[in-house]
Image 1 (cartoon, chains in turn brown, yellow):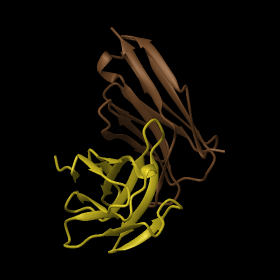
Image 2 (cartoon, rainbow over the protein chains, first blue to last red; image 1 turned 30 degrees about the vertical axis):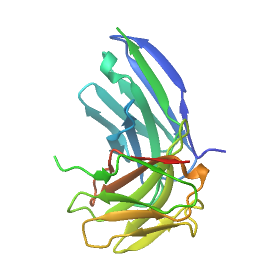
Image 3 (tube, chains in turn orange, cyan; image 1 turned 180 degrees about the vertical axis):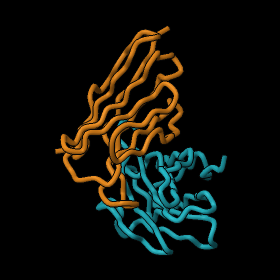
Image 4 (tube, each protein chain N blue to C red; image 1 turned 90 degrees about the vertical axis):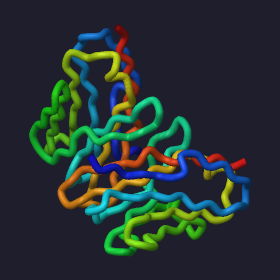
Length: 109
Length: 112
């Protein structure tokens, strides 16, 4: 069983829609990472969180430690948000980060 | 903003050859990692490196692989006797205390 699961696997949205990507993990963590992988392959860190909620621009990440669940929200989605969004669990601080399978998002104008 | 740089961006090699993938982490970072992503699959952890030694390695990281930080700035991944299944995108990442991961743009390794 994968230690980090994401849903949905693929998501198509109309420009302007509110988007939610879900992540569940089965291990104890010190932090949960949300990353974005561009079509060209580069990976960018969006959030690192261990509790509560973080916001950066139109992106919001939340985590519920008790339920071992995190969500990434994108408000007012735009075609440039089209990418693969990856949830990754860090079990022990600064140790390996276990990647989820990713959610492929396509935002249509 | 400081970046993690990786060279080369694309490496083609013949099966059985040795390759060295190079990374220059962000200068004040202390933790270094190599990950790989086989085409169409998720990113997999290979190895983490701290204080000039390996801190953790995955099952994938067997005797075929080695890492070095030869001069205090570069961080290299050596793959000996490459196999077809080593073809993948290899990502280097670094992080400082309390900071998120910073990834390089990756090296696409093609083994023919």
